[in-house]
Amino acid sequence: MNIILLGPPGAGKGTQASKLVADRGMVQLSTGDMLRAAVKAGTPTGQQAKAVMESGGLVSDEIVSALIGEKLDALDTATGVIFDGYPRTAAQATALDELLVSRGRTLDYVIELEVDEAALIERVTGRYTCANCGEGYHDRFKQPKVAGVCDVCGSTEFKRRPDDNAETVHTRMAEYRAKTAPILPIYEARGLVRPIDGMADIDHVSAAIDGILDG
Image 1 (cartoon, rainbow, N blue to C red):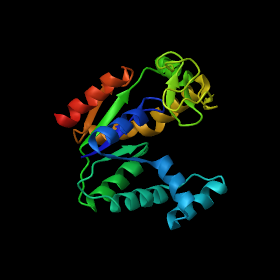
Image 2: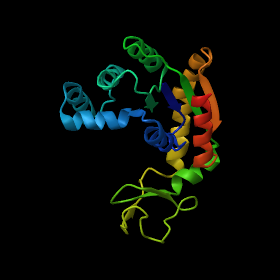
Image 3: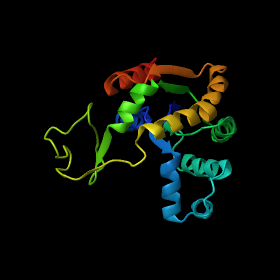
Image 4: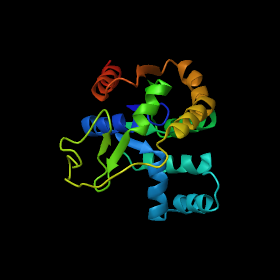
């Protein structure tokens, strides 16, 4: 099964993708992670991306598509894929169709995590991670069992992303509405979109996704 997780930054795409990877053996394809890995590995596509990023430019759709194609080629066709953060534009949606068709795959669902902007600001500005193992926490929704001590590794060092602030959330939401939301009609016309409440708690969102995939 091949799905797209769609929603603005902070909607919980990464959390839900991780659960699908753990529970269903699917593979998460996050363009940001793939770019960093390709640059680090020094692959031909990674070298192209590095040159663009070092010059301050935006990595082209062609480079991103090449990365995704390489990842798909390395997977068994029976392995389900989660596209996280891609496609973001109509051009990328077209490119993804071509990538899948050429590899005998089809897109099954586009799961849209719907969010409330005010609630999203609270969610994003309150989150932080263990500086050692990366476990995620939140000021209100998920604090360590022992204050100041990571549940997973016992570290007492935590960090917050400098861009996790209200102004950044407003900017990301505006960009999402302008660039990504327009791809929804493409998939709605094909009957692939399944909207769910991205502001519900994590387990409820997971259950809703499971209901779609098992339906």
